[in-house]
Amino acid sequence: MSHSLLQALESHPFVSDFAPQDRTRLAALAKEVRFEPDQVIFREGDDYSVLYLLGEGMVALELEVPGHVLRVQTLYAGDVFDWSALLPHAGKHFQARALDAVTALAFEGDQLLASFKADPKFGLAFMLRLMGVVSERLRNTRLQLVDMYSPEAKRAGT
Image (cartoon, rainbow, N blue to C red):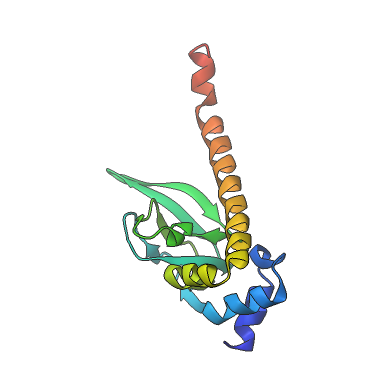
């Protein structure tokens, strides 16, 4: 583990409430990755497992539908993405694409899961924090859908 990885991790909002020893444990599992603008990070259906803590840049979560790509959400520095890494063989539900130069901390899902098994208290803290992120994403998606479809719903008399 490098000191710079620990510093990058300690400045990420996802781990701000973690105990120092848990941040150190995570830093030992982290690797810094970079993506160029417009580079696809992963595609829908891919089955490899890496969780990302977004450090710099923006990432689009997208759905490919016949004829075009729909942006579902835009992620910014401080966000977390690809929590399916902690669900072995779940496959990706979206495509992730860098919108500009991106740096992130990457964690192999199987290494995280092994760490959680070795220290269930740490695993529970991590998963509870991640569930907060998932819950917030679902709320934001719901608001986006309501915003997109409410004019049609009003015209239909609902």
